[in-house]
Image (tube, rainbow, N blue to C red):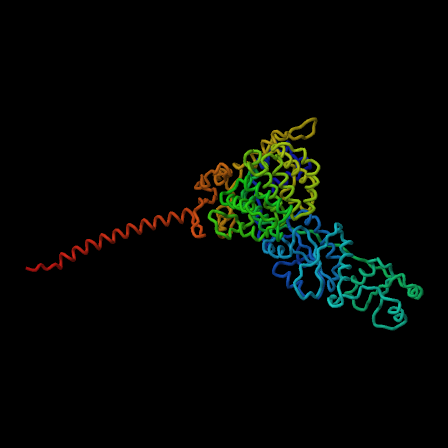
Length: 640
């Protein structure tokens, strides 16, 4: 919290840190430990809440809500980590409040595809990008994935008019039960009403054929008893002439305000992380989300998408400095993709390999999301986008540090291999389309200027800071982790210089810092899940869920002990027994027999049991042999 306050004191401090503050004795700026809130999902505030005029759908409710509904539906499939979804949420809340009186005709819903329990349903609906707007007709007797709105204009008034058009696309058979007619009335229908006595008022709105005013007013007032609104076209000359003497002016006031605020729950501190470290838990969680959630929304891969996926797997399999079990999975996936001469691959087959349905020994990628350095102060902030940035920073540094890593892949002569792979992945697969458009604009403008692997490292750093500058102060910014220019002076003092009173970057020092920060030796294994999905209790919290008191950083043993470079093949268990590491001891790959995987521990037990059985049988043999001889001597009767 103190770091947060210091960074918010002034714009200059917020970007680069304030030298005068560092001289006043605030040592917290010099420290590298940050306390992070570990949230209970039931207590955190999400992008939409029950206080908003939207219906929050989940995997358990979405089908039964949409199937044979008495009303039509407009549902936004979004992701709480998507920056554009966060920026658009006030408009969507305002829209829901504006059309609240339309709920007997059409309702507004939201479904968060970033929640784990919604992964499968978003895949079933074929949601590839966020936000995706789907219209669902009323009274549908069978399951329907809806109709996608693909227009670029998503302003409130435009979406209101689209909702009107969608309602008018219903037939008589599926028309929403309580929705009044929206078609214009003829003069023959309206003229007989003039002069009649009735218990309710009839308002007639005369307008041009392409006007939406009449239809919107009909829906706005459909909830009110005693008033019926009808629309007629100005082309009906006999009607307009008759109404001139009976004309009343009605002023309609529409309120579109909505409460877009919210409070963030403050929870006890129970997880610590170091800003000077990169965490393998973030990288593995990012891979899990990328492979099992984001890519899984594509039923098949072919053409440019398949080539992009193969290039991505190639780069990650060759450069990812992770646990042996994860590297083996990536390498196996790469070999499988290369060996397949198919032009079209169902993604379910890829998922089967990622989930190790073949039970290949020594392959494992955690299916748990555990954000450490990428954890936000509430759900929907940071998380997956942060991990994706971190992953590609690590890959660019690995490509620069290990020039032979991509040998014999067709990418070895390309210094922009990692950046081009990232660019194609974001265009073809990344869920936030607006984010993808911005990244593509940056790539078109400056990526051709990159001529070396070191320049690739710096290019990604510049663009990341450019994105931070653009998003600073927006709704997608985490207030506890402001989007500042990075690295800050407390992390890399030599990276910052001043020329004529203006801050400048020393890019030689920045390159050195990036290679050290994203290097394999600086990746911490703390808080990772083991193959049994058991988190480290010592670093995550005690069994009774009480907060863990922060310890001094000297209690943390070397954090790179479980990590290794892919080609170096360092030992996975080096230093794992030191106190306070919270490290998972990785077992060496075993062997496969009849399709069953046996680890080295299993084989060792078999050998021990085999030896024990042999010794036991030998002891029993000699025991009965001696006993047999004694029996013969005892009962022997010599005869003369």
